[in-house]
Image 1 (tube, helix red, strand yellow):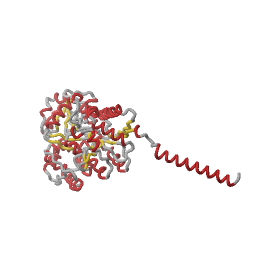
Image 2 (cartoon, helix red, strand yellow):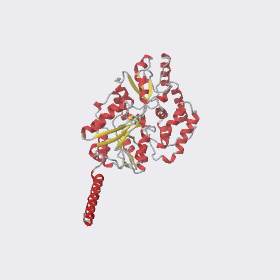
Image 3 (tube, helix red, strand yellow):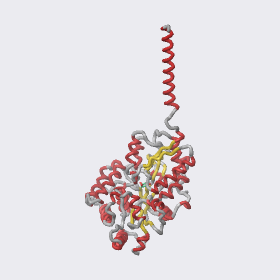
Image 4 (tube, protein in one colour):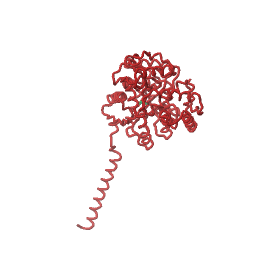
Length: 440
Ligand code: GAL
């Protein structure tokens, strides 16, 4: 071939090849996302027990009925109270790899994401869905950072609940509804253990459930004590209310199973369902386990408020948010709208044990446990946000509390060392307390 023609052919081939590569790259970059926006919703949660899985399944069903072309990818990370999932999701969010939405407690738990600019402001979702008209003020403020909305609540759980096995209590002639004080509570424990040699009156689970228990005991010392605590104002190791709470915890521990550190919260609930123990202190996600076991409220099991907290409602609020830069932003928003909707909440909460975060729920869909706690929600004098479940105090405080309490329950730390550790946690992290709670 004539060398001039040969050069021309090479140039033409090079131009075609370059154009092809550029076209290919631009197709890849601009036209072919790896997953089509409309098709996928990617969410994380830690709802893996029987009752929890049933509840989130019902919520996902509501979403899928509305958006049948969308596949919901659930990453369910086992570990009650988010103990395993929270570090995983924190790493993902801070690396800019957040899923489209994830389970998070309302209040302090999300503040680090907000401060890093990693949450989208969702004021428009609140306004478009008229949420301020149906969600209680206390939950509205727990859903905000800096006066703007950054999450929607899916429920309101109650933390200060004692679950009991009714036939076993009847067998020892104790009417649980008459138990108001720790003295009466421990008298029933002693009577049960006397009548059932070898059994433990109280079932208790792993580390975070012990911190949950401590929080309820402290609330039972009075709303003013609890308020000081979550505002970071109990900073003395000789605080009499703190020491009194630890004394109650000591007596409580003398009636529990000894393998508590290796039991999940739902395994501890199961000991009540089976009648192996009579009492368990747990948030009302436990009701989901009784429902799965087909136990009947006020026949097989029942509930009272933790002694000293009759007039109080411990708040645990699960929420979802719209992280910045997610792969499927439209589906993220659709999910938040379903989570906040009456249909979504009325599918989820009857199975979950929580009440709806909305005041317009269809009560006919809820069972007798909900009738008891729902009536309390509207009549109690005080609401108190949970520290152990992410809302009431900074993460720097709450993330350390479980190991401090666990050292006490296992006998590794004395009462005074534990009181010192709790007081120091508040003073050492004083700068992180950005909310001043007024609970009474
Ligand atoms: C709580 C959460 C509840 C329930 C519980 C046990 O922190 O708010 O929804 O899942 O943990 O896993």
